[in-house]
Image 1 (cartoon, rainbow, N blue to C red):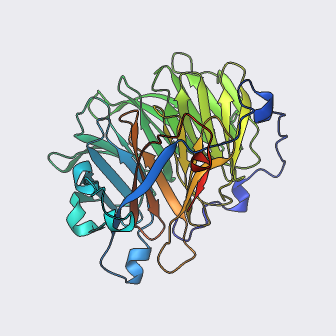
Image 2 (image 1 turned 90 degrees about the vertical axis):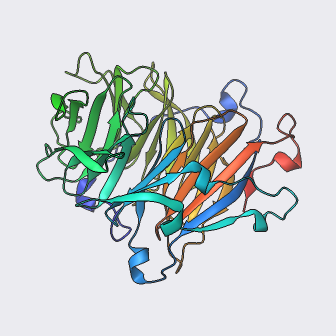
Length: 395
């Protein structure tokens, strides 16, 4: 996410290319010789936009979309310096099954669909709900290098951390036991204890062996809170054991450019995104990539990455203004939909799955024009067979 849709300067990328490691094709993997197919019936449910068609609406690029752990609240943040809070029930309504697909789509306005919003002092790059707060506390990272926690019930900041020397904070995350982490252009990951007043600093991690490579993404393993992953401009992802931060336990090398996102699929598997235009799935025990996902376009911007763990689906945006869904089993997309950003030339800037349910799913995506699109889906009745109706879907 950025002001001009160009996010990385050439000086950020190392001049020396990283050698790409060999990885097996899907046909080489056990049980993966079958063709990609879409086992989900995904439909557009709601479109949330601004009633204003002024140029100011175009500047509302949303770089962060996050459901709270219960899936009842949705938070968004971006260039407009606002944290908007939506209630899930206000975004997704029970459709009339007898109506056509087009007429089932709800057209909503941010001003009425949004439950409330908080104004922030700087542009936002990241949001994350604090575990154990019952949807009351959310953390944010901003362009001024500040991490702030907000009490949404009182609608006031709880504390601010300005530990990155004014360098832009790209990412914020929490572990299940209350540790917080932020990554920044200063090449450091700051780790603090959110249970202590003011967020007492626990550790400072500098991936890249002292080369000060900007940190674009951080995530704690939700299945094992002792493991934290970080992705950097040096084209690598690093995994650290929080009990011994002296050196990474895994270094994941294989991307050709900046690593923009890291997401855990399960306790032993990680997916990464990069502006080399692909996603990679890694087996942490061997630190090797075993699958590459290609189809979306990504050469310069944050376009979002989210994993729906219950269904094994991966969602991401694209610089050609489309949203893509991959099944973790296949390297080709199973579902693609054009976004239709206003004015043309836009891109999908953020994606988030609701981590609730197993037979039904919800994905929210945002465009560079500030429009939210909400997609709902259910497992297709033909998912047990390989038929034409379960072929990859491109809309």
